[in-house]
Image (cartoon, rainbow, N blue to C red; front, side):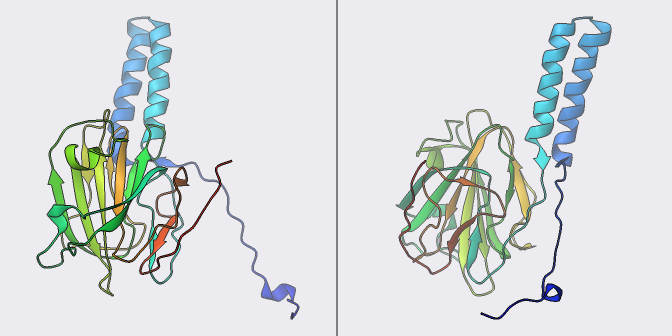
Length: 246
């Protein structure tokens, strides 16, 4: 094995950076902080003021927007959300995304469900680079997002992205018990890069990812994902992986 000279090595230092609060959440932080000051200085209810101050910090943390480093490579599909992989199953693709120009084929695909608790980052990112072919919003219920039927019954928004090579990956933002609004930042026809911020769901929710036909999951049940960083799958690669909970 050839030896490496020091000149061949590049040393890079990465320092921790406190995540900023996304503009979408700043108004909520300001409102909560104003209420805390109201209890402290005007009503003189210090105990309640401290409780609201804690809620202010939690709100700022909920809307945090950390910088992510997205891996690049042929066929990589990255996680669109932070959270826990709660379901991996074979299902028909969403009917709203099947058929028509730029639509998905009517064939069963693997769906990976990522549950976001109220403590997770809630900014969602696109799994692949390409063109947004469809954005479909569907009003619905606000059931527990951890339930399987939430994919069909809850308020949700489907997004379908097509890569330059024709690979199509769909993902669905699903509102939950606490979530009451899905906020999109993209529209049909937009060009996106892998890991780009595409929207958020306020206060707890779930994101389903529909992998291309013939593609299997590269994450396991119980695994935690990081939006824009964790590799969910490689398009066209179907192989069984195993893991151990410990």
